[in-house]
Amino acid sequence: MNDNLLTQTIYRVVLCCVSALAVLLTFGVFYAGKGAYEMGWEFLKYYTNISNYFVFVVSVIVLADTVKRVRAGETRGHNRVIRTLKFMTTVMILVTFLVYLILLGDPFSAAFWRDLGNLSYHVFAPVLFILDFFLFDEHGTLSVFAPLYSVIIPLVYVGYIFLLGACIPGFTYPYFFLDVNALGYGGVLVWVVILLAVFVALGYLMWLYTRIVRTDGRWKLVLRGKKEQTSQEKQ
Image 1 (cartoon, rainbow, N blue to C red):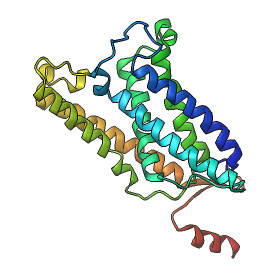
Image 2: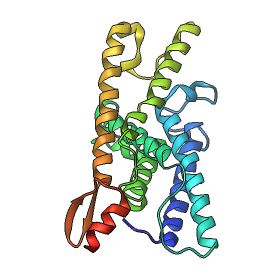
Image 3: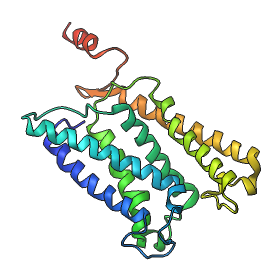
Image 4: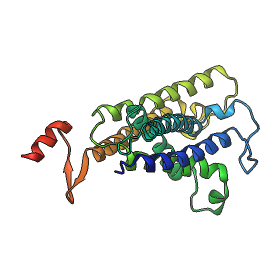
């Protein structure tokens, strides 16, 4: 973990710029490549886009607080705002990254790496945001229930897509695993359960990572509060 606030500020400025570009590209702005669509409401049905909007908003809030602390004279520390939401968003964008690379995209094709929009909101912005969590967030502070909270946004999204499908004639589902017309509600439910299990599993792997810190060259499991741990180390 790097607790240098100036380093965090520089990194987060870059993150916000890349994330802003990714958001603009989800609207079709400055982009007319293969797979681009005309400006309309369609961009609001894609989980990739929505997860990138969360990344941008959370990144801006965290950057603003980091800059405020640096201007106040602080030099060391970790993120102290919306930590649970930041964790939830990290899990959210990690799933976006993994699902696209494994299920939807073809990272072994040249076209994948020539597509600026694809790289921005599926690779660059997600990776930078995920690294921010691992590099700069304080470990051992998240609630054990935080990984369970990470399924709230995906469940709301699934309900949102079902509502659009029920209300809009001829609605085109954004992903094959949510296509009620092709799979039926039972088939979609199976996929939803699988993906929610992935969310929870990844969330708890990340949570476990935050409970393991490197101290004096050894990995140590953090199970107690920081004060109790510090007291024990002094004995």
